[in-house]
Length: 147
Image (cartoon, rainbow, N blue to C red; front, side):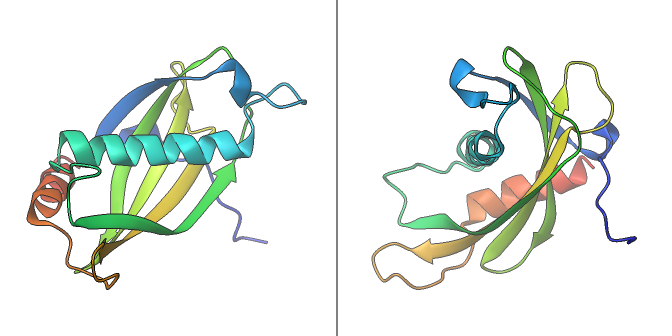
């Protein structure tokens, strides 16, 4: 089978965030559980949206709902660990964004986990799809320019 995903290179990402693993992230097998990685993805993407895109949770009328997520696991990480998460945009449309987030241990050059995360933007009042807010679109342009 040639469809198996491979770890991604640290050099493929224009922006990084450090994240401390927590004791509760480990599972009975002694490594960070897959569900914790999804929380990491959510945290990193929303941090970017808040810090770079001007998103104001609880205030803005248009928000991004996660409509798809996936992850490929290559090697285990365990608590305690300072993880570095790389972020890039795979696709931007009029009303959705597909992100890629890679998790790196310490000084490793290849990801231990790589995931995707798709946001569909929605007007909270009407419940209908909405264009990506301009502040977020502008932040993504600068992110892509850094690649």
